[in-house]
Image (cartoon, rainbow, N blue to C red; front, top):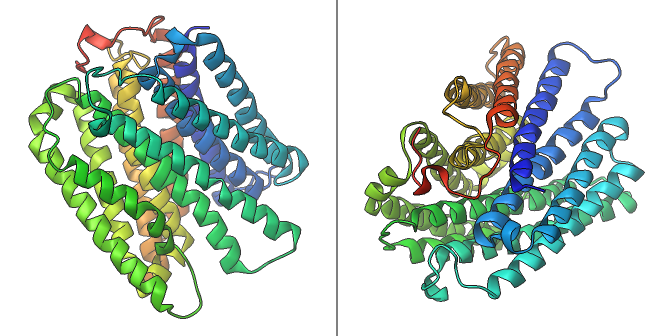
Amino acid sequence: MNKTLWYKLAVLNLAIVAFLGLCLRYNQVYYIPFIDQKNLLHSHSHFAFAGWIGFLLNVLIIDKFLKGFETNAKRWNNYLLISSVVNYGMMISFILQGYKGISILFSTASLFVSYYFAYTVWKDLNRQPYLANPNSDRSTNFPQRFVKAALFFLVISSIGPYVLAYLTIIGNTHAFMNHNALYWFLHFQYNGFFSFTILALLLHNLQKFPLNQSYLSTFYYLIVIACIPAYFLTFLWKGILIPVLINNIVTAILLIGAVTSFLLFVFKNFSVFQLRYKNISALLIFISLSAYTLKVLLQAVTAFPALSHLVFGYRSIVVGYLHLIFLIFVSLFLLTELSARQIINTKYSGAKASMLSFTFFALMNELLLGLQGFSAVFDVELPNLYPALFYNSIFLFGSAAALAFIAFRFGMANTSKEFAGNARLHF
């Protein structure tokens, strides 16, 4: 089975996620009588995590860091087939029944699939030199180290669903406990697995050129160390607990130090970024990394209890923050990876327009969610926000569907070589 199929399937999954999001927005403005909104939300979120971002990150790690489709194609094709069955099983079962027997079975299977992936990749990484630079010292092999950090956070994120299941079994309806268990999973997925894998892929791409690694070690250690205590920035508690407050202040300092080191690293290697990313990809990378910087800064400011309760007390603000990571930081970066492999082949008419369209409406979605949060916090009535989000989601889905059509109609049949043969993105 050609690895190109898995890349194309990921783009199709993006279109499905966008369609489910469109249905959610439609249900907020009008009504779909035969679909429960809560069940649809569970389906959308689970498939967005596992079917789009998680799935494509898996494919990229297997392909770029392990060369797995060349060295052990049967194992990884079987793994991705099982993963796809589980992902589609979750999507369909959550729509039909919500959190019940079959959907719980598929979501539990998804956790065990992720354990297999993390264990196997970690083991394979230890058995081989770094492929981008076989002569590199493992101690300075930051792309591989970021992958390992991502795998670690992927595994510990699964504690959240187990706690939620336990709370459900014992009939605990305490809002804080359920919130904290859910945010454990979200935090270590978004700020752990997703973010660290994207950073690993970015560094993998850049190290094909002479790279100044100044500040990279500082950034790595600060962002890894900060990730676990940063969970408590989302933690809700009654009253102000001094140990948590101290933890949050220290974490905020670590995060500010990390993002400062990251920006200095980017500045030192600006010419490398210019060599690696061109035209559309350069625009998407700029927006993506700007979103990452904003994400870390927003994490840091929630160290103050008043701001933490304000931010995490309003669902619209939480949704806006999650979409900032999901749609802007991660998804736009992944589009550049798909373009580099000619899965989204910008040589064909409509591909560039579809990428720009998706980017524009993703940013519009973030703006509208921001206005929604502003309206909730300051009790200011801003009419027609829900219809605006619905109409924007129509165009967002249209852009994602166009990207899927381009991938299947014009995507490369063989992606074993880097686009243009030299790892540059000529769009």
